Image (cartoon, rainbow, N blue to C red):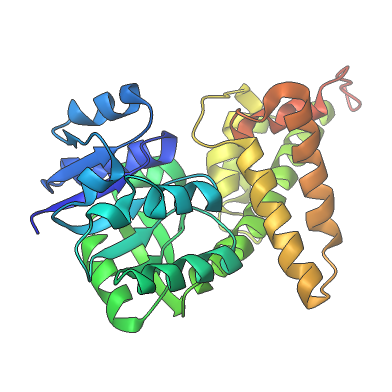
Length: 294
C-alpha cells in the first residue's frame, strides 16, 4: 500500500488534494469531472478512471463529497471504493453529512471488511492550503489515531469525539456557531455602513474583545468590500443548518436563532445565490443606504 486515494475533487476536495500533493504524498484521485482531476494531476497526483481503481493498493481513502447518497454510491456502488480496496483499508470521510447516515455507512463498511472514520472539517479552503484545518473525528480509537497520522499535514487541530457519527455531530454544532456568526457579522457590517462608521477599522477596534472571532477578522473586511470570491457555498450552509435542526427536533431542543439563520440562507439560495460564498450574505441587506448620523 503505497498511496493515498482521494474521491471527490470539488472546491474543498481539490484544496485537500492540493495540500496532500504538496507534502510529497503519492495521491491517486477520482472525480466525475475530468477538469477537477486535471487540476490535481498538474500538481503531481495520478488520475484514476474509477473510485475502485483509486482505492486499489491505497493505504487510506479520503472522501470529500456533498451528500450521504453520493458517499454511499462512491464507496459501495458499481466501481466504488469497496470494489477495489483491500480488506482493512481505512476510509476517512471528510464530507459533511448527517450522523445517522454516517453510522449506517460505517456499519456497511465493516461488513465489507473496511474501517471508517468520519472526519469533517472546519477552516475551509484557506486553512486547507496552509495545513491548519480543524478536524472533528468519530470512529474506533485505533482507526482515528491512524487517520490523524495520515492527516497531520492537513490539520493543526484533530479531536477524537467518540464513535462513528460523533465527528459529524460535532460538525453540525460547528456549523450552528459559524452560520449564526456569519449572519451576525454581515448584519453588523450593514449597520456600521448605514451609521457612517469606518467599517475597515472595526476588526482592529474589536480585536481581543468578547465580540472578536476568526470570522469577524476574516469576513467583515470581505463583507465591507463585497468580496464574493468563493471559498464555500451558501447552499451547503443550508444543508448543515437543516441537519442541525433535524438533530434538535429529535432531541426536543428549541433552536430559534438557527431556524432564522437557515431561512436567510434559504432565501438567498432561492434567489440564485446558493453557489456563492458566505460573503454574499451582504445581498440580504441590499437597499438604500442612509447615513443616519451624518
